[in-house]
Structure formats: C-alpha cells, structure tokens
Length: 381
Image (cartoon, rainbow, N blue to C red; front, top):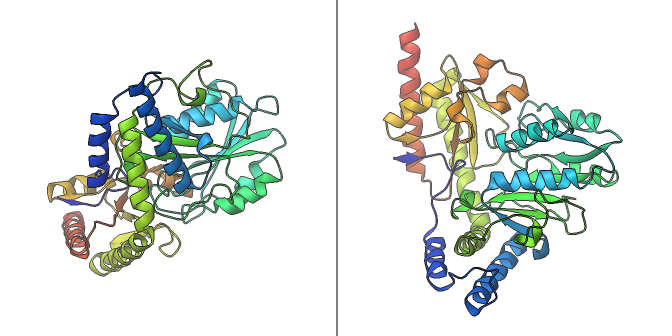
C-alpha cells in the first residue's frame, strides 16, 4: 500500500510506541491519586505537559489534555464563548473550517449564540476582507484554522491576531494540521487558544490538547470538574500524553529537514500530475504558499469518491478531504467555501505527504492516478 493520507492520520513513531509501553508499564497510577503510584504518574504527566507546551511556545499552565482533537475544539470553543457572554454572543469563523469546528458552532447557535461564517479566497485561505467585515462590536470570539486540511492553504494568523488584539476579541485556531510541521508561535501571533491532535504528528490516537491563555476568562463545559485544571472530566491517559510529548519532540527536532524533503515531494507530485494528466485535473490552492504536506486537486468529470475507491483497489490510499466527513459523501466544505457548486466540489481529492514518503512512491502514485483518469475519461467519450 502506498499511503498518501497522512493528513487523516499518521502511524505512531517507534519512539512514541516505546514511550507509551514504558509509561503504561511503570506509571499506571491515576495521576489524581495521592499515593506514590499516583504521584509518579502525575510527575510524568506534568513533565510531558511542560515539554509539549515548550514546543508550542506557551506556558504549561494553559495546556489541557482531552480525548481527541475534536473534543479539544469543542471544549475550548464552548469555554471561551461562555466565558465572554457578558460582552456579547456573536462569533466569527470560516466556512472552510474542519467539520468539528463547524459542528461546534452549530451547537452553540442552538444555545443562543449568533455565528457568522465567512467564505474563502480562491486559494482556500480565509477571505480577510470578509472576516474583518463580519466583526461587530458584540463579537467575542473568532476561530480560524492554521492550515486547511483539504487544500493545505495556510491562513495568516499573525495578521489576523494583530488586528483582533486591538478589539479585545478572543482568537482561537485549530492547528492540528500545522503543529509540528510548520512554524507556530501563539503568543507572538496573538492567539488566545490553540487546539492540537496527537495522531497527526505520529503520536497516539484518542488524545488531543488545547492551550488557552491563562489570562483569558473561560467557563468550563461542566462545572466543578477536578481533572485538567477543571477543563475536562475523566482520568488522563498519562502513557498517551507521554507518547504525544515524545512525538512532538521528534517532530520539532526534524521539522526543517522534513519540510525540505516534503516540499520537494510536493513539487514533483504537482509536476508529474500535470505532465501525466494535463488539463484533466485542476490543482487547488497555491502550491507556493500552501502547506507542503497537503496537495488538493479536482479531477474533471469524475467524483472524488470514485477516484479514491479506484486508487484503493490499486494499492494507493488517498482521501476526498477531511476524514471526519468523507463517509457522508458530501461535497468538500473548502470547495463550497471557495464558491464551487456541489457537482464541481465533489470532484475534489486530497493527497497528503509525510517525511517518510519517498520519491518512488510519488512516481507510482501519479502513474496510478493518471491511468485511472485516462481510462475513466475514455469511457465517457
């Protein structure tokens, strides 16, 4: 199997697996328990929290662990929104956000919040003028993802953060596709909250994290919770957190080399797809400014779901977009946010890369996809 769906999930690294094994064997105590086994687990939890916070560039007191990246998004957005109701109940986000962000805001709308969703620019990034135009005097929260999970478009978080700071509006970013892969500086960029997911960077599944600036007021989803500084109920999975810390440290140590390698792979991927498939495809996003880890495209006159299944039968794993919505067979949210109709949006597919991807795999993948496209189009004539 040629695996080009790393934006959906990554395999755990060997070091992360070994860290998990050792932690599960030696630090099995409940980190909230007061005996020695609990204290040892708590010490490992806090050292891991400090390491991840250091890689993110924030103070560890603001970092909270959750059961997934999606849960981190839900809990942090609800906490921030509820914590600012005395100033207003208006929230601004983007149409192209990950489904967990959009679904959280649909839920908040049912609780009486007013949500404004702004469209995307042609490259898949948020339309800055539309975003600024949507902000009102009663706006208390803006949530914009760092990297679009479908096109790889990188949003200008620093520019947005600086603009929002003068207006005293909380700023959150879903950074699951950027943390560990691209430069990220929440403090300098004016971010009040950032959400992460361990399995996107070769850590374990079932673990997310959110940073909320300790100086910002937030209200927990469930009051009087004792775990994670009152942020979330449930015993913390300390071995998973330790494995997450190991994965984060590995990613940070190799980030520059990985980016150079993956950028070369993406350039070859785009070039070969254009050479082999010509005008049968349209690359989405700006290859020069988007994340090198993600390549989105449309295959004309072919549904992405069909292309994905055909690729799978030939040993190539790709995606039609976010793994949290592909089974719904709905058009790509990002393509819709750009302005495409449903039929065109459903032509979208995504290939996502990793430092482990080889140039040979790129050649094989483009051969497979080009052959599928050629045979499909020949049947239409």
